[in-house]
Amino acid sequence: MKIEFDRDQFETLIRLLYLGNWMANAYSDESENGEFVELIHYICSQAADNMGLAEYMAQDMEAPESITPETLNEIQYLNELIEEYDDAVFLDKLIYNLADRDMLNKFGEKKIEAMTEEDFFREEAPFVQKYQREFARSGIQNLVVNIEKPAKGKTTKGKR
Image (cartoon, rainbow, N blue to C red):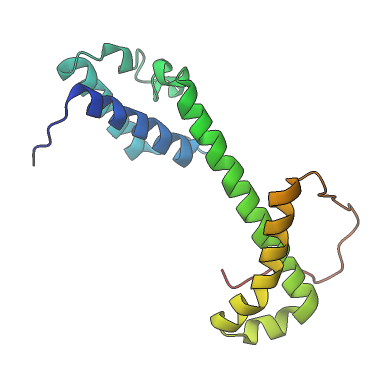
């Protein structure tokens, strides 16, 4: 198979590689995913050899920090995309974790496990909507964390 790119498309592909590699490896305690790294190295070498984009070629292919080219670290809008994504995911996860906690407190684990998915989502919806409204209105300004020893046996185990 042969795919042809113009210079702008190839630069966009490299930006997508940067974002994908960041998502796959940014929070990993283990070394970066080898197959991703190999593909990034291959694409970046093509950028240098065939597209006149030598600035995207990693200088030291063995150094972990060179897996995504230095040039891309300086592209502000990619970092802004990452921040927007992180913020959205954080809030979404927070909303559903709080809703699941409220579900557990209201129904208990056994009743939740006995619910159909449809029943679970119907019962969960008012909790989700409550937190969505609050965070849309106030962000996390009103969020309070009460650090106490949790009640024994209480876990948040939703149907996700």
